[in-house]
Each structure stands twice: as C-alpha cells, then as structure tokens.
Length: 462
Image (tube, rainbow, N blue to C red; front, top):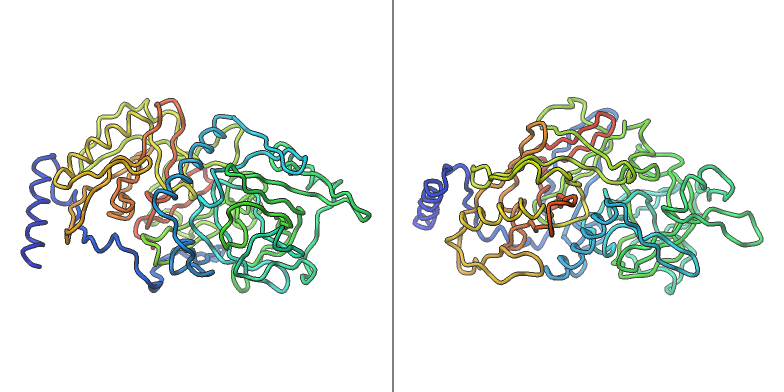
C-alpha cells in the first residue's frame, strides 16, 4: 500500500516536471472512487442560510438517495445518446430554430432535449392543501412546471411511485379560465395554450412535446406549492397533466427553473429576488440541495461572472468562458473561440465546447494522462481510459476561467471524469453556443442571480 502511494507521488512529480506545473496541479485518485456506493450516505450539503431562503434536498434520479427509490440505471451509452439529443436541441433553440410537432390535431412546439429521460436530478416538494409529496425532475432548461393529476388511467398517465395529485382533494386548487390574461400570457408559440371544449367553463390548456416524442397535456392551473414545512408559495402556476405519453420513468413531474415568466424562479421574484442555487453531489449515492433566494452574505466563498441572456430565448442562463487550464498550464485558445457564450444547464450531462477549445483540451489532457491506455470512442466521448487493475490514478486538475476573472478548479475526479472518460465533447465548429454540463458543476454551489446579473460558484458545497 505504501509503495503504491509512493509510486503515485513520484508519477505526480514526473507529470509536473514534464508539463510545466507542480504536484499540486495533479490529484492522486483511488480507482474505488469511480464505483457507485450501494447505499445513500449521510448528507454533507452545506447550503448557505438566510432568513429569506428556502432549501430542499436534491438527489440523482438513479442514485440511492432518490426519494422515489433508485430505478434501473441506463448504460453510459444510453445516457450519452439522450444527452447528445438534448444538447443539440438546446443549441438549435438558442439559435432561434423551433420545430412544431402535431399531437391530437394540435401543434405543440418541441421543447428541450431528446427526451425528459435526459434529466438527472430530482427534488421532493408538496403540492396542494393538504400538501401531497411529489418527486419532480429539476431543470434549468425548462420553464413550465407540471405534475400528473387525477383522473388519469394507465393509458393516459405513466406509472409513478407516489400517489397521483388529486386536485379535487385540495382546497387551494384552481384551474385557470381560458379568457384570462394568465392564459393568454402562456403564449401559443411556447406552450400552445388552447381551451377545453366541454359543457362547463372553458379552461386553459397547456401542451409540451419533448424532442424524443414524450408529451404532456393538461390544465394550466394555480396551486399552493410547499417547499418544506412552513415555507409555501401560494397561487403557483403549473400544469396539471392528464395525458402523458413517452419513456417517462417513475418521477411525478418536472420543476422548471428557467428564466421565462412561467418558471418557479420568475414566479417567486418578489419573494426570492430572482435568485436560486443548487449543489450537485459528487456521486449518485450522496445528496445535494436546491435553494431559492441568495445567501445573506452574498459574496462569501463565491467567485462571480456576469450572467447573460438570449434576446429572444428567456429560458437559458449564459456565461462567457475566457480560458481553460490543464495541470496548472493555461491552454493557448484565442478568446474569440468563446465569443458565442456558454449556457449553464442542469439537465445536460457532458460539457460541449467549441471545436478549437475542445481540441486543445483533449490534447493537453491526453498528454497528462499518457501513462494510461486509451479506450475506443464511447458514443461521442473520445478520451476514455482503461484503468483496470490500478489502485490509484493521477489525474490533472482542469480549471475553467470566466469573464471577469472568476476561475474554478473542477472537482477531481467527479467533475472531470465520467466513468473513466473526459466529460467534454467538441462541437462541429466555433460558431455555435456551448453548454456547461452537470458533471463539471458537481460539488459547487452554483448561484444564478438574475436580479444582480451574475452567476456565482462556491466550491465544496456538497
């Protein structure tokens, strides 16, 4: 054991000399850290507190800490396939390209990625009075929140572990009438609101069709949303879904955290100032958190970079990447390569870089990891390593620098490697927007503060 550790330390020193850094720019990682733990470990989240802040636990949907219980985890190839679809869709939407698909004679705009199955993190909230617990996927790339509602039979709704929300049992549920500003503001070009055609009052309908063909249709409604005991949001606008189709997987709905008016963040601006944060845990068997509102001591432990928005797409949060370093050495990447910006997204797994930036990163990372044999390309990831039989691996630190000088050292290995593969891919060119995926965000508290126009990163938060 001692000789193995000594060898790793010697390798660190060798890499440092060879690549112009020092041993602090490399991390000796036990290969056991790449394996998932079978049980949920004690939460180590350190959400910064404030009187006007509400925090709830967050977990990976396929991990042991998921409130609805772990489901069969898809293979890496399946995750990457879904992830690529989501990433491609976000890029196309950011470029102003929208596709209309038909569902039951009604045109519903395609929203988000290849499928809802590309989303990975869940939170448990209460909806209605009395509150009914619902486990929902959180998504910074979506705006309208929804849950499945009664009366839904097996042909109209997919199976979920929690009881379906029953609006007739809630004293605070109200469907939104069709001829109202709230319904008109939903926007036919976004969620294709329509009106019910029955004998009773005409009610507002919403419809979303995701890129992979999954759909949700129902009544646009208001209800009390309970974040935790004693902390509730009254008259929260959401979708009460009565017709869902697609490869959904046990979760009860979706929580939209985007920047458009329909999102939870926008609806609670008067309460929480348009700010929220989360910490994605380093593994699937530990917990993180989602918090509404900014910390009281707003700058403690954070580094900040300006937040940008697309003029015609309010959903996405964008920052400007200024540089990348590997093993303490700054890569030679022209600043113009990053001119299109980077969307920060909780639902995308792997970070997509402009082609020139990725080429430089891949070359430097492979050079620093040259002691380990490369594996064949894995459905888009082309820098994967065979670590079989090794007790420890020496991994170079990867740092991202944003406009304004904010620099973050990605967590090693959880923020750099995904099942032994470098968690980055390259775009087809330098002419499209990039995306910072959730692997790179692990262990950071990522603070989105629309009111102050900045994004913050606080390391070691979970």
